[in-house]
Amino acid sequence: MSVQVLMATMHQQSGDISLLEKTNIQTDALIGNQCEQNSIEEMNWNNHKIVFFNFKEKGVGLNRNNTLMRANGDFLLFADDDMVYVDGYEKIIEKYFTKYKDADMLIFNINEPVPRRYITKRVFRVKWYNFMRFGTVRIAVRRKSIFYNGILYNLSFGGGTEFQDGDDTLFLCDCVKKGLKIYAIPEVIATLTEERESTWFKGYDDCYLVDKGVLFWAISHRYYKLLCLQDVLRHSRIYGRGKMECYKKMVKGIQEKINYKK
Image (cartoon, rainbow, N blue to C red; front, side):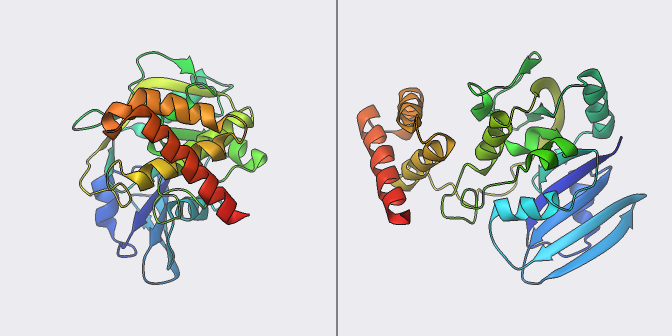
């Protein structure tokens, strides 16, 4: 078994080991670095193969795909540069893939200074009705399961793209639709440092609601209105406006965006 980290980052100095030290990398890793140059640099660090893919481009989905399509580890971890892996994370990944031999993907817990993300307290299957509670940096995936099913990140969603959020949600959605066996695991693999501001989130403004609506349309062309409705029923309070206003903004935004694309 081999574990490989695929990290998405920006504006790093190629070959800078401080990034590896800061994030506590303890395995082979591919670093997708969007910057002002095009180059590839390989290095050996603590007996692990590290490759920096430096590309002059934008878009988190494109960044993740650049490392994903070059990955060769048995099990892959998707990482950001504002997280720190726990010591021995490789053994944790191997332990649970050995225990759940039919698993294509495992989703772990992430520590946060101020807890905001869903915390798994018992093992359960992740399916269509609960996959949207999880994000990319919690994922460990069997590489062959992703490759054989042709699953990649959507290039229109996420930081640096037209629609600023949802790349990880759509990735998980595709995994569910392809029938991958996914388990949520109540074990921590990393801590988020939250040392940098979001590159896309500017508050719950109209743009946020429109982008959220388009995300639901991308998840299901048939049931997107129901997805919009359930979202505003659950979150209108944090959006700071009425439920119907939020719903109309999402649906109208979808219609405008999709009509524009035709």
